[in-house]
Image (cartoon, rainbow, N blue to C red):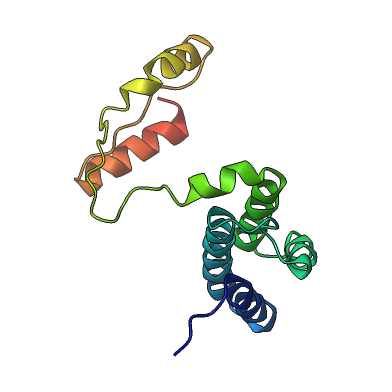
Length: 143
């Protein structure tokens, strides 16, 4: 079986998007299209995007589905800056260890500033539902 060109893959993904009534399918097809466009650029095609794709993406920005709109806008913006497209393919490898800052220490300065400006402190819910109800009731009553 012969390999499909990236243009053919993008065309077929466009068909999926146009013919599907399912928001999730359209979103997944847009993610796949993003990767195909990035691959096309990374492999040296001068034009990262087949001409009809631009029209489809503009149409999708008016979709009633936020996920579809968001992906369409992301791809449009990336196409405006084609030098970024190869970087999209350099994401973490599945199974690769990613360091997680569980304390979110990077946000501490932001949180402290918000508290100084009158933001409410974080409400920590416990695993005990009765405690959560009490906290919720106190939040509603302002105590």
